Amino acid sequence: MERVLLALALCALSFAYGAATIQLEIFPYRLLKEAKLGWEAWASVEQGRMPVAFEAFEEDAAPVPQARRLAPKAGAEHILVSGGPYQLLERCPSFGCLAWITDRAGRVVHAWEVDLDQLRDGLTGVSGNVNRLSLYPVGMALGADGSLVVTFQGRDTYPIEIGMVKVDRAGHILWKRFDRSHHWPALDAAGRIYAPFTDHVRDVKHAGDSGVGLNCRTGVTNRDAIRVLSAEGEPLREIALLDAFVRSGYGGLFYAVRDGCDPMHLNSVALLPAATAKAIPGAAAGDLLVSLRETNAIALIDPSSGAVKYLVAGRTAAQHSPQFLPDGSVLAFDNMGGNRELGGSRVVRLDLVKGTATTVFPRGAGPLVPVKSTTAGHINVAEGGERALVSITHQGRIVEIDVESGEPLWVYENTHDIGPILKDAPVTRARFATYGAYYVHNLEFLK
Image (cartoon, rainbow, N blue to C red; front, side, top):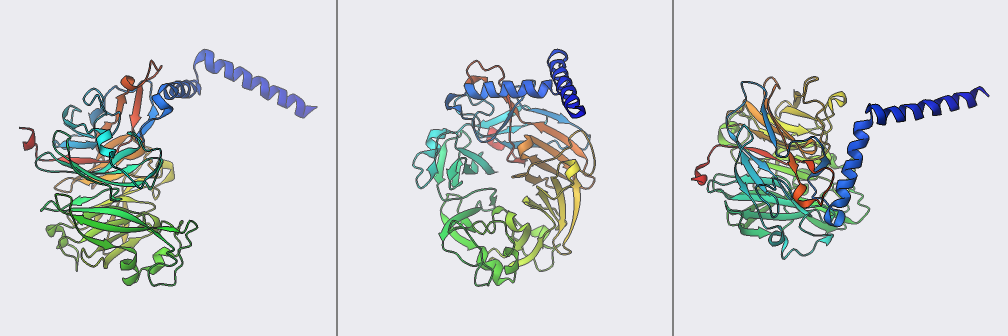
């Protein structure tokens, strides 16, 4: 009897709190309301689809991205922001802006709109629902003439690795390649492009010539490599990675990977500058810094042979986008190796020589905490190395930090009004992912 009375009492309390939630608008009224509005808005979109970078509807969000200076040490450089379908529609009304350059107050000084139908025209060998919202930009590099080299991937496609495009300052396509390029590439001083790419190979049983079995259930294994291309998009050479790591004595990295069909998951390439190379014994200008998500490893490799010169593994978890600092250390977005109470993601500083790791951001609670992006995440270091831009991809936020102290200096919230592509939806403000942000030092192409 007591249990029955207790159950009835709990039901009565639940009903009363539910009624109070609606009448008094107390927790979780706002969450429920936004969920309802979001669902209604989602249902009103043509074909019920949104671009992959869409993160959430936010009823009270600003209609355009907002920038705020948080500390006097924030930089003055302009910022290149990666975009995609439906973003910045007031500037790029047909397709949304592929990318744009903003000043530190959030004013857009240039944007690239690319015809998404032309971008995917001629795409073959990809299954799934391929439409203008399926392809999204990830990594990009800005040329002195205002051209952009962009890698793009696919949502709901197989494979997800699609290719690369180069557009001029007006967004016109100069060339494109459906070559399975992906993630973040790098450019050298001559304009050569170093891009991650993936082949899909059948019946790979072992990691190189080692005894480590890959145990791929589908029978199709991702073979990650780096392709070097000319500025005109012509392939120059390739650097296969799995065999190179095994030959360098790192076959054990692949023993405990989560998925033998994806043993490496290369997600970034960065070039070692000549001045920085002097700080790393045995390193040379042009060596390549690579990030292997599935082995939780960051390595410095020879650009010709792929031989591993330095490797730090297990200090990060599912990391992305490592970049050099002037002293030879490396800054990386550590997706899952941070403090769970602070969101679980962090910016970490690695010493390739000593193998040590130090948390840079966040170091404690604050207005921009929690920091969480279980996938993606991008780092770009200022010329002097004292500051860095951190793209917290799935929070739709870019934060500039002081590298030494971890202090947030500037923040950019990537929210947009997507009313033009919604049909009288009750909410049209949305937050979009940020796949990359880059310091811009030369705006001569705007003249």
